[in-house]
Length: 109
Image (cartoon, helix red, strand yellow):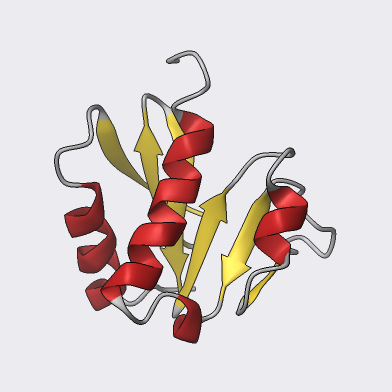
């Protein structure tokens, strides 16, 4: 699998200024790590966002979000966001903030 470079660029820009961001090829796409924890990523033309178990149901209730079932089993706490859900800069920023809210609550690795 590949990922859309323009989506990766937009995520990089949205995370600019955030401390301790690294990138790692993962799941056949590109994951963005914050303090060693996966926050979000791009795969094909989708955004994946790690929202954590407490915000999972709320995230799934949002338009254009669905379970991440990469292995055939849902990965609890991580959602796929279809392109219309992050097409606008405001939509992308909202999802990035959801991911950051969870991973910044974790102790750094």
